[in-house]
Image (cartoon, rainbow, N blue to C red):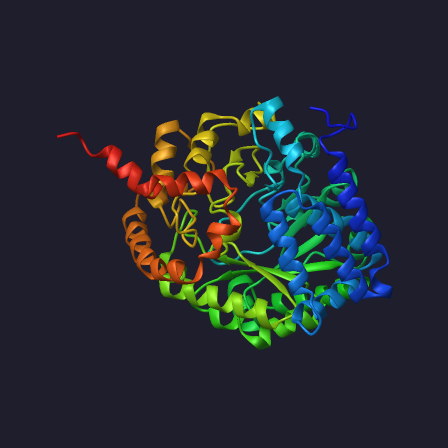
Length: 487
């Protein structure tokens, strides 16, 4: 489809937001405090929905004098190379958090599909490491996606207004044309999830030269925790790479898979302060999900530990000049599960359109169909029709928090497994996951009631959240009721 300017879908308003942010960020290093107020003002003017206005109001408070946010803004504006401020930061914020609802409505009207905010793509599943618990296994170059296919997918995504792409895998830098691909799409923002062991000085220079890249670097903690999972010497190599990138003004985040063995480390002051010292500006916390050929529920956080992670993440936000996100416990900020194209979707190295990077099932392949056609499949639509899967958004996931949901939908639509061992979620560990979900419900019921009254205000324009609330029961309860034969 074409946008208002005859090119890929991008409204005049959206372009103006990105331009205004780019302008403010271009001079930010000279007067970071003034620039932060200018950015907050620009976003406030750009806000079209109540949720966007609430985010803009929060940002103004976060950047207030004397707060960790003010220190964060100084770090953000003085550390980053001008290319990165202009090309990644402006695009990422405007397209992910302040997307023009008008362009979304236009795409829905023309295609029948709501464009996802972001897309995760695994161009290769090859990796130079062999990490414990990782679903990436032994792959060869013949299993990689072609450059032409990935380029076509991103172009089709841009045409419906999706302009943020997470490049994962595998190790994305094992895919040779990664940076050439990113160079072909200068108006989109890219975030490779990388182990950072393949980035040398030449690569670091090009990353900053391109500018529309931020790196999410995988770590499990300090040397002990990281090397235990990723191999001896990995932590030292990552620290050296961080120095290369920081000294050039690259944007970096951490990506931490949290387990019972490292939860106290990765939420502790010493480790968080190290990330700040190394120049990282944000971070992602992921709960270990037992997927793949050897699922191990002992590596999962217990329900009580998930709550401790929630508390730890919130403490980091209050006390540190670092933005962090928790992919599960932040369900209240996203309106619940974001998979299946509601907010994001994953494309495997084989071209299969998967609901989520952890949900290895599909009914369509991008080698055979367009992106819009794949997003519009009955499988994806059915998942979206049930989201969020519960009113308590601290339990957003249809794999581990509402495990009957995805099992039912996969069977209903005949979705095929896209990765070895994918079916184990519905066979050998299904009953243990149901027990885990019941225990999690009991832990989080009082937390939601006592601490998340604000979610009803924040999400009062979210049709899916309001629909779930009106039903009064969770999606897995709906499924179980439907399966009970009439007396």
